[in-house]
Structure formats: C-alpha cells, structure tokens
Length: 89
Image 1: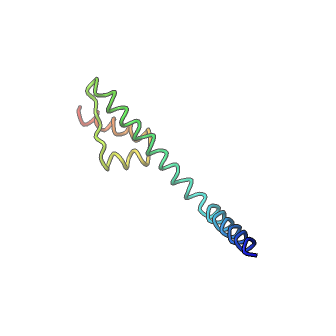
Image 2: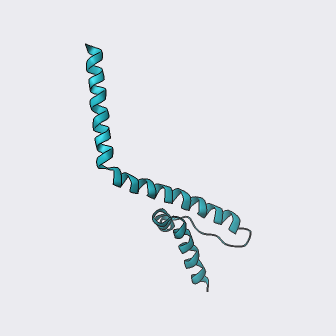
Image 3: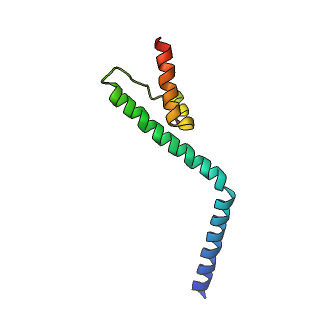
C-alpha cells in the first residue's frame, strides 16, 4: 500500500511540474534566449579582447556592456565596438 501512495505522489508531482512548464513555457523560452545571448556575447567579448590585443582593440567587461551583450548578443558586441570607434574619432 505504501508503494502505491508513493507512486501516486510522484505522478501528481510530475503532473504539477508539467503544468508549470506549460504555463511558463514562453517566459522560460525568453530566459533561455537571454542566457544564450549572454554566453555567446561574452565569448565574443573575450575573443575580441584576446585577438584585439594584437592590434590595440580592447573592450572593458563592465555592467553596462554586460547588459548590452545580454540583451542583444553578438549585435550588442558590434554596438559596443561601434560606440568605441565613434568615441575615438
């Protein structure tokens, strides 16, 4: 009898977790996209800092750049480089 109760509890918990994922599917997708943009953007920033050290280009990794890269991803890195280029001219 105890095994049947344990199984019923596990099934109910699984159904509740599935219901939460169905309800929050769209917000979770947005969060995963934001995380993916952030990871790809930071990899690009570090690559630019590493490769740019040979030609004199560097981009600071601070909270403003982190927000831009987190929201925009690779285009955010391009925007940071464009702003840096315009500021120099």
